[in-house]
Amino acid sequence: MTENSLPNEVQTQEKKPSKFPRWLLFVAPILLIGVCCIVLAVLIKPFFNVNVKGGSYSIESVTLSSDFEDNQPVDIKDVFNPSEAIICTVKTTGIEDGIIGMRWYLGENKIYEYTGKTKNNTISTYIESNNSAVLPEGNYRVEIFMTEEALETVYFEVKIYRPTVNPPISIPEEHTNIEPPWFPEVSFAFDEVWNIDNTEWKINEVKVVLMDDTQEYFVAVVVNTDMKDIMSISEEEAKTRTRAIALYAIENGYVETAKGLEIDGKYYDLDQSFFVILKNPSNQQVYRIKFTMDELQ
Image (cartoon, rainbow, N blue to C red; front, side):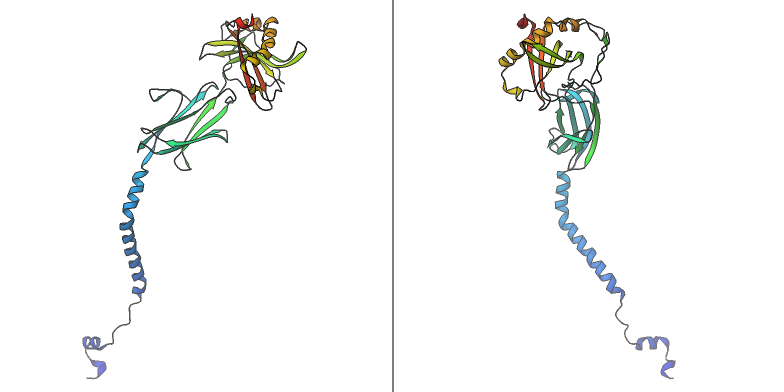
């Protein structure tokens, strides 16, 4: 029997060993990477859990209101008057001292930003008009964030309430009020020049102001002045300088005209106080001088 005629199993036993399997060159590195990943996961897992636990909070609600009572927002709405505070309250779930940020915008202009820690899963901040700046009419928004990206956005509007007046008042097209309305008001005299004791005063407007929150109603004269540092004068000096303006308004019938206006169906008692408002449009400084009617007798 020749070698070629040996039984198959004998031939198999006598064959030389096979070459090294090339597929192992691909499988081995993959297995090694998998083992490394498992080891790293075991080592990193404790630190990863700590981070997740430390940041495990989320936004539950965002509320806009004009007041706050017993740690709760009241008078919830999305349209505000310039005279109202606008309070944004964020409630979260999870840890009680999470970091929350709020970015306030008028249109596309950022006007305020605040970041702080929640307390009892709540944080609030607000914007409002003040003596030197009145919130203008327009569309606003507040973006709520934890890092940089906004997670929630709420929208609101500031809108001036304009009372109904009888007889109707026509505002000249070329008139621009230099003091934006803060409270509901009715302007009835525009762009006049009062010559008092050889001094010319540029009167931007004379108006009735209705401070409904304090139930105070009065006539105010807005004076366009170029005084550079209005706020540097004392109240006593301011009254001395502007007393003649107040007296001129009373003596020339402006208060009586205001009393004769039917505003939202009623007439107002305007005999308690009178304001002269000095405004320098170039630097936006404002000085509001209040007189009682007794002082002007």
